[in-house]
Length: 425
Image (cartoon, rainbow, N blue to C red):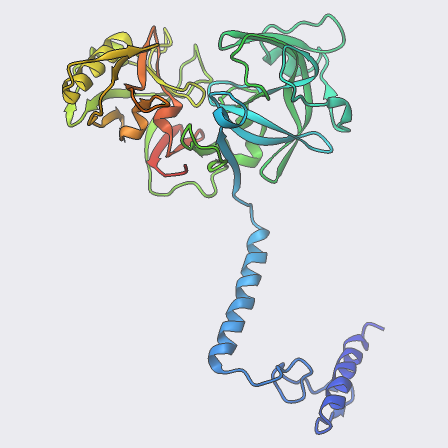
């Protein structure tokens, strides 16, 4: 049967050709059939009118392109998740991504946080949570982890009053409590089965992101750890303007599609805070002049946890007081406006238009120069302009406003962070 299948097919095709063109004749030498070219007069696939050489080449190129696209689809894809400012969409000062949780999927707008390990979402029945919650009862792949699960030892303050592994922790100035759970989470088009996260039952405080948090830190329950085989502990993001209402930013997961031409600075390891992304800040420049900062104010100290981190969850950059005062004073001198006012926690504000200098963060092997849009905060009416930085008690934090419209690459396997200018607003 298999031996005569293809000859029969060709006989049928040729019969069609002969009916269309009686001049086509077939010569059958046993089972060896004469095979005609697609564009021969006897081919039923011949175009209605002859193609020019250019048309032939262009048609072939189009078919080639379709085939290449198909072949490329068989290779690992670039996993890109859209990012938006939560201020406009969920009334939260965080940056949010769309995550689909459960089977069938339920979409949650989760805050991405590089300084958190675990993921958690408000679940149905949660006290103090927002109205948008994950309905775990509708997911056929949801399960609650028991106290015997290894992950139960990796959450803060686990308790085992019942069969579920319960936990409670602080987030910002708020407290959250819930059960440790597992379900399928999908980012972009990549499903991650049995993803461990917190199913919140109670929250208290105003700093809890309304639809949950996706932890991008370096701990055992973070996205990096739970998707290591898929994304090789590599990701990058571009944060749009805080005023942008669209999902114009992007979270790129995995080494594929990351920038080639980009400068890096080494990631530092702090055993006291192993999840945070510490970098070596060696100086700060205002305009073209390096600011005189006491070395101890920016030095990395693994024994105390002091140093500098890059964080996506903090909105405005904070510098320990000696460093902040030095930078602030240098900024004021360059602006040369006598009447300096304050607004809330910002102590360098102006009620007249100013020509602000750039500020450059100098890291080992990499400088990041920030233009005015990353430095100045304008009031709604536009009558007041403030330097969008403040002082901190113990830790320097390069925050998300200063990262806007930059591609920030976290290459954990090679222990480095890269930053390059990229507009995504």
